[in-house]
Image 1 (cartoon, rainbow, N blue to C red):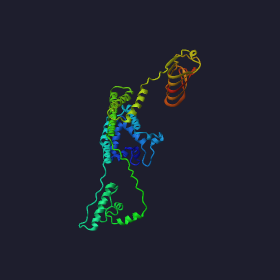
Image 2 (image 1 turned 45 degrees about the horizontal axis):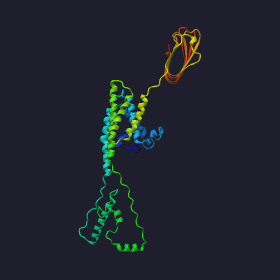
Image 3 (image 1 turned 60 degrees about the horizontal axis):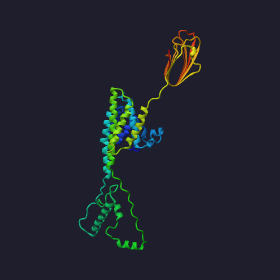
Length: 429
């Protein structure tokens, strides 16, 4: 199916017109496509990925620009192998994220894919190949409609034979000939103009005119277009290899998803299972032609698996405790990444005291004395904050000044300046 020939419906569509477009293409009831799309959406979210891809890549009726042209210009010009690779990776990601919340696995999607391939796609391709390789049969002229031979009937019979020879050499016309005014279905004005004198009634006049006319150069040899290549078994074997490869991929992901329902598996198991399936497909490719899409997916998944399997960078986690005001640092405490716990719970306060601490990326936990008056001037760039039970929020550019009174409202106050660029800030007693 060529994406350039498809257009999403803007009149009968319920969401984006994708189901109506496919129903018109396949000449089926749109309700059947909508039911199939719903089942695919409930099959680990595969239908959601395919529907979103169709909406992004196919323009609406009356337009030549798809939504993805405004987001990522030039993506629609990528080859089919890249599109297949992207869809497979997106389906795997959706199955990994939604398999636990959706009722079906990838089983219904695999069954519907097999029904579509063997029930519509493969028969239509075979019918197209058969119709393209069968030469058209030129129409035959009717027999002689004359009962008694005369000089005129002999000339008409000769003309018929010459017209038949002309039609055989020319091939079948693109449209049926018009009806003959003399009730002869073989009548053709085009054929008559090409051979107007089949019996040579005007041969002498034509010979005299030819003698008086200047000599004409010999006609150039006709240039014939190269014959169209006949489809070979290589394409069929490549399609078979596509089916084998993607079937192995779906089976591998289905097995991991089934195991994931009974016991928790690592997220790394999904790309590893797909890599195993693609490895088997490449082994089978030693006997069958190897499609390019499988190789592209294997390379991309190798990179994804390597990134996921790479060890996480070491974080700098630390805990500091202060038992007296003299031990508090004069300069601000700055922590790069990781988790920092600042324990001030045993800090005695005889006067107002300030403490400044910040974390670039990670978690910052500040424990304040349980009976002290505490003022927290805090900010979080991206993340969440939980401040003394008075503030609990998440988002971007968070910050406030939170005051919490202790047992003696007129006593000294501990002022904490806390900042987290990316991560979590917790101030608790």
